[in-house]
Amino acid sequence: MTPSLGPGTGPAGRWSDLERPPLNSSALRRALLRPGSLWTSLDVVSATGSTNSDLAARAAELPEGAVLVAEEQTAGRGRLDRTWSAPARSGLFLSVLLKPAVPARRLAWLPLLAGVAAATGLARAAGVDMALKWPNDLLVTVGGEERKTGGILAERAGEHGIVVGLGLNVTLRADELPVPAAGSLALANAVCTDRDPLLRAVLRSLEEWYAKWTAADGDPAASGLQAAYAAGCATLGRTVRAELPGDRTLTGEAVAVDGDGRLVVATDDGRREAVGAGDIVHLRPVD
Image (cartoon, rainbow, N blue to C red):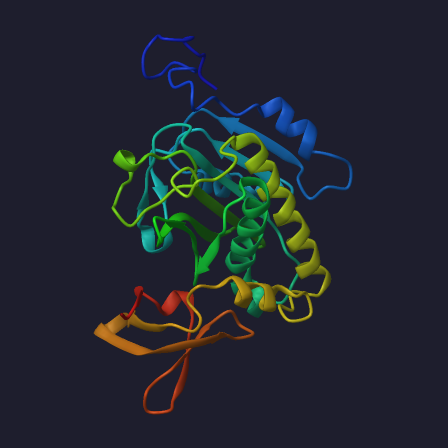
């Protein structure tokens, strides 16, 4: 990490924003890196381009359970290489390295699992209702309106590794939002915006759900993951328009998430079509 400049020494100062103190990496390691835990290492860096890219580059030399957290991401990426940016120390920007020994066809559930784990952990620690937008968004309610406050990106890293990244707006203020439809835990009136307990809650919940899922050989039904995702998914029961490659659109009611993690859309003509996350360019609700 780069040396801190101390209080009041400019925008790079470690305490330049007293409402956004740095993460306590030593305390986080003591709490999370225990014998038998999934988590094997935890590093906090002051800034990087992308935690996903950094962790993927080292995947071959790292054991499963490596965690990389950045106080600031300068080139954060979402699905389809969409950008993700936020002020330093205003959120959680992290990636974890997983090497699940489950059938390849069930790996599509990993980003959905991360969504369930993050929503569950944050609801407990932040005291705010969280919802999931299929396939990879975390939603909060701000002023009666659903707002995106987080996103998940899973990427292959070598032959067996998968890096799962999470970006979450925690203390972002209204005038700092990248787009009007964005939100943050603070804007949703969270009872806790201290990033240390929030990060611990997310990683402990992820460890718990990952253990259930891998113990069930990646079966989303047997592990309870499929039911938990459906219960927390704001997309289900709504009319949506899926924009697909080749300028094709699919409009209908989102009725289920199937065993392969695909969204099942029921059209007006009685058809049911399942689409995977990789097939979707945009998914929008239809008023």
